[in-house]
Image (cartoon, rainbow, N blue to C red):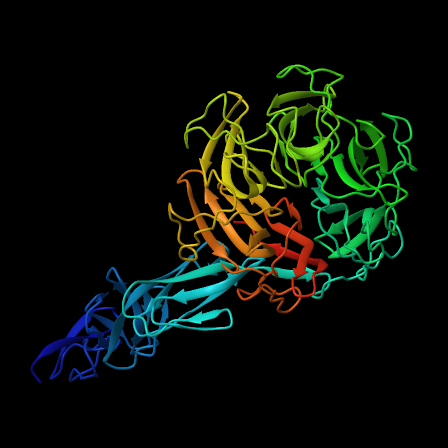
Length: 637
């Protein structure tokens, strides 16, 4: 045979050639060669081709192809373009983790296919009074998402729009998303009826003195005073309860109550649960558990830095049902639960001691008067009081326009502005305390509001004292209901007539509800309630006006912007004597509204929410007066 020579081994360990007809044989080779499957030569592992592809646009996959041995695996990187996301990756029995696709064990040629989908952002935007969540969320093209819309306490969902969605309860579900879009939620402030009766004349439930209870509630009343303490509790003192028990002199109160917004319970703290209780003064300047102011309404109140509750003046009746007015100053300590007679006279009807205008003195003292919280507290804690019905410098009971400042630190009063002599309250209008308006918008030393009873007051953000309306004297010396707006600057000591009419009994201009306008102005009134919001706007609610010679009550809600100088009619009716809509107790609703009333109690809590209690209504056909004891909350603005 020819081919490759072989060798034999002899015992002498010599090699001999042998000719064979085949290739050299070793332990690792065989004659004739051989085949095998896939790629690779003799004895090599089988390998397969793995290819990759994408469907449509929106991204890429790499590598485009790779060879993998049988039983092995490989990975691909999937990259979505901006604005797209991976919607799926299939093929070769693999799994996706992040943007890495790992095949299963390879047993044949196969392909990996990646697909992408456009992704958009749905943004939630909530206005004042609530929230919407999430603030933003990614949604694939053609998909939908749900957002939760939540109204704050005292607000309701007004509308939710955007992204082609629908609202069910407080869940807003978008339509199919095809672009970036925004869901916008708006909310409306709404009154909430929280406590008391929705009928007039409620007698109240006192419970046990000092013990809170869900069933406790003050008797229906108007014209008392309020405080908010450092813990957020709402305090109420006294007031007039109508002509229920004493049909001639009326029912006057001196009970002190505390309401906890947290628990929703009232506590009768101090004073009597009967009408016309007389005061116990004790020793001036000395607190005692038996001390208590006499029954009264239309007094003034403020709090000090230590959390004490202060009270000045007011009017009530003596032990024989004669009408009397006070100029006493009281302080109540929530910590000790005791009253202190601080100043003024324990004898009703005291005349005013004016002293020298602009000069504080220990002997100065405003005369006894009723003013229904026409009071300001300035940045340094001094108290300012204006006008009302009371005793002037001669002791005559008149309508006043005097402005006073009281320093709790020194205990001294200063007569600042206005006349020491008042005007007639009844009969022909006479007296020196008429309005001097000057030029609208221009401060002047001679400007002064006319004598008046129960205007609305606000403290300006710049420390100025604001006053609106009341029942009193205009620029002509005539008397009636007013809608003039005034501002007093403590720095300059001057009044400015800001707006409204300089003559009595003006009609109002409501304009369009919710729309500010230079021509808008509330009608003349007295006994309204006012407060300021976080933006420095001044709010006004209700009060009493006159039409065709008869007194009528309002339930309109107004906002005044000192910045723009414009009024906005915010809610309630533009007609007299509107009835209330109570809705469900404890539930805010845009349809809820207090019935028309005058002289309600008013608080502003630590969160800026406004609380209103009671007040009086009147039935003209039967000439019957009704007091209320319903408690309402209107949310922070």
